[in-house]
Length: 493
Image (tube, rainbow, N blue to C red; front, side, top):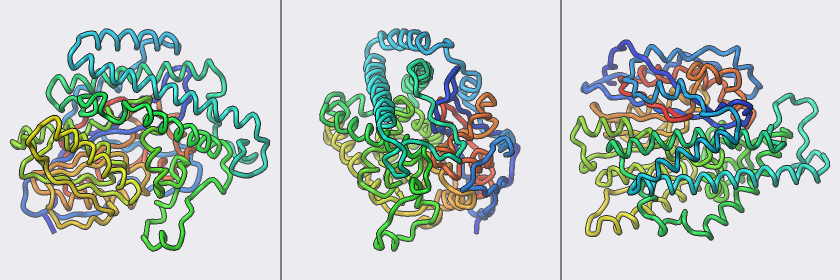
């Protein structure tokens, strides 16, 4: 065991803002906190949770849940915490938000150089995802209008006994107001993200530097992603609104069952086809989530780079030579490429429980390495390795990594699994290292959102009600870590 670092007065909050006037679109929300490992030789690891509210599987009134009370944990707050806590969109109508935000984005991009490249890239992506999202809603509505309820997976009527709210995008004014609010929030997110580039927190994202050679600029790739998304959107909205018992869970053959997946993992979270357990799922995931966030997911996930940068500066890490980083639950590996691009000499290990998502992650790694060779001829990046592993039981020795990163995992874990995952991350990081954790906002982070925050459970997120009340900071402190920094970007912290 290791001597657990003593509890210090601490403060941590998590903030969200997928809420605009007249807006009822359900969206996943996310957040970033970093923990420093006390530079002690030994510390003990204890599993505990301040909110063991196991109510998964039932519809929960979040008004009955406690607040995580993160204010007690003692993070150093970046200026973004207050900014997003007080954020309001520039206007009250969708069209006015679109006009004001588009004008701001064009002014920012007009500075030229990296600003032009950054804003041109994001405006193009936001436009693509907005059009793709609208196409998905329209395709769903066409299906809903022509398919009588027959109680099977192709129909769209909700269960007569289910009182879950319907997806409220059935009319054009609501769709315009929703898109306008999301676009305003996206522009504010991009302003913050590019501000960190200018401050030197991280590099201009590599896919922007890569330009037309990046696959995101390929018309064939974009057409394939749009095709996949529209089909998936119809399926998700159908299941979400009908909520038939056959719409929940995943089908596994006998070989897959031998993989010993946790029971909670065998769920088609957000009604995604096949859950995490197919190639099709892995290939549509990024375009689905980026459409939901109107293209701001990359910017929010880059929050992990804020505390990683301050830790790296304080410890003379430079580009990472001689250091090892672990990303757990890496998903498709897109964020892993951003990590490597900023610390290219660092050796990196990425784990995930889905072999299908790991295959996508390998593809992202290959594409980034090809870019790296073009961008820095004659240089070699640090090694990268991928492993199928459960974050609750990582196959690595104690104190094996200098940094550990985790993005968007805990809201899909039951409470006891969150505690186990936090303890494992604490176990494998070295004294003096850093753990960067990113996930959804919780109750109390944005009081204006509290009344509707729990609606995300209706998108087949059974552990979300307990997550938004969980004292996540306490999980890591009890595992032996010391709070470091807190930053917020849009619906991530």
